[in-house]
Image 1 (spheres, rainbow, N blue to C red):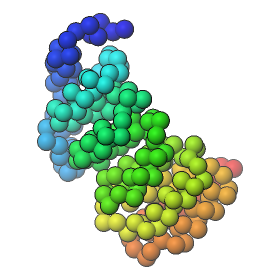
Image 2: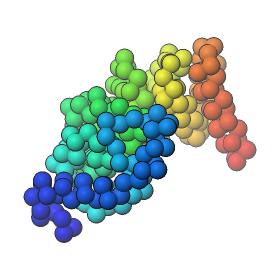
Image 3: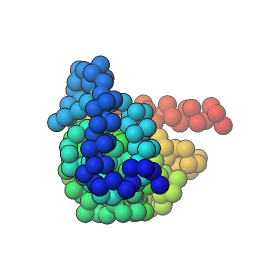
Amino acid sequence: MTENENLPLNRQIALIRRQIIASRNGETLHQMQREGILYKKSYGVDIPRLRQIAAAWKSDKQIAEQLWTLSIRETQILATMLYPPEEFDRHTAEKWLKDFTQTELIEQAVQNLLCKLPYAETLCIEWIEKEDYKAQTCAFLTAARIYQSLSTDSRQKINQKAILIASSEDYSLVRSISVCLSRFCRIDAASREEVNSVLIQLPESKQAKLITDVVKQEIAFIEEAS
């Protein structure tokens, strides 16, 4: 138990906000803005520092939900770190999905929370079928993290969806597909053959070429190492 746990919820949130403000980094914020990473509000706190802040607090649903509703980059990333996966239900997942305004936030949500959900595989399959690039990006990135536990049927569904949307105009989605297929290649030789079959079926486009190049590099690395 941390010394902060006995404080009222509003005091805990206020303390976390003070920690964030004390850690603000103008240089990082300007760099993010130059790269087009624009949040409604941000203090430019780097991820390692946010992890340090999160480590001082116990995972707590109420704290995480309060932090999320503040709609600040740092509080939302901390929310993904502090929300207990076993308490993160489907309704909340759908609600948060609408607030994923930046790829960075999607990646943090996947890494810190979505891949740890007891229904992560089911969520992947449901979200790749949404006509929403954010949901699909989440699905492919989550699948990339839980690839070893995915069923054969789920992998096949994900592979087939990759073929259908490989020419998406959204770079983050295309990148997430390449990451996912690359992870599938790590399972075994049969899985690499399946992914090769997917690459052959990809449409002719610059996006599909990007996916193919990334995955083939992964396959070459695996074969050289074996």
